Length: 126
Image (cartoon, rainbow, N blue to C red):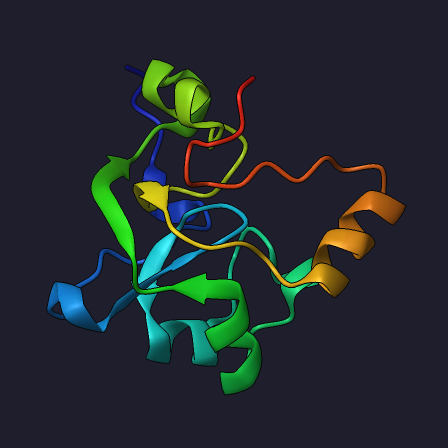
């Protein structure tokens, strides 16, 4: 591993609240508290999901139902990040599997951008 200073990179914070207060993004599976999503939005998906300051959008685009946690400090070099399809995302804590689907309008926006939506519940075969 390089001596790169990770503090200079954008990253999601490590959750410090109890698990029952955490939510996982349905698009990228990043795990943060509802308050963090409200204050910062999703650092990976904000342009599409627009979660910042939007409790309704947070409810629709994140889920409290997720399994497993992966701490990712070096996404570009992690085989787990590649396997989880999070290698291009910010450092942070990610759910292994997230139950739920993004709203139809978000899926349509992704389709219009040429991005294939893959649910994070591991039902989509690669």
